[in-house]
Image 1 (cartoon, rainbow, N blue to C red):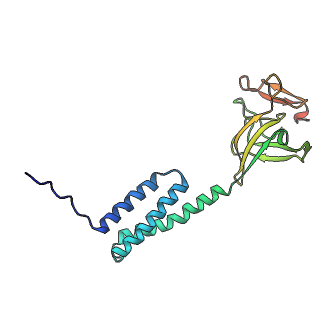
Image 2 (image 1 turned 90 degrees about the horizontal axis):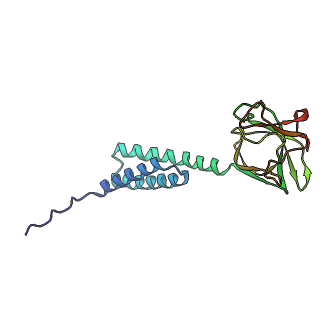
Image 3 (image 1 turned 45 degrees about the vertical axis):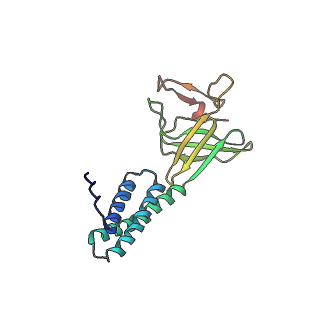
Length: 201
């Protein structure tokens, strides 16, 4: 009866190296910054153990340790920057946005640039008009009142993370009294034209 061959024996250093390779590969493929940070911390701890086992003589793995130590603060900084972005939620009727004017020319594809003159209304009291620079070209225009919108402050611009226009009983967008749908510039998407070039609410 033939005996099974014995599995190869690996040293603790080889096992640590294999673990480091595994976690580095996982960190490289991970898209979630928090999980990537956790994986790199694991690499950092394994690298320390390897350095102790190998008495600091393996230059390549020392370089890996150094790289992981450098990567950890960078990932931590990225996570902090992501979590520190301020988001604001406006919702009708307590605290909502009115779009007073498009500040950039409208185009045939239905967009009107990145900037809008807006007005925040809090508990029925309109605040002074202010300019908002959006990160993407929003699909709302002058004359619109927004039922709700979530925006994230990216420092240089506001990122829209969902929105919905206020509508009337027929389901049409509720527009300021001096504004009407206008399809002269964009036959399919349409725009909003306001008498005097500015919405009056």
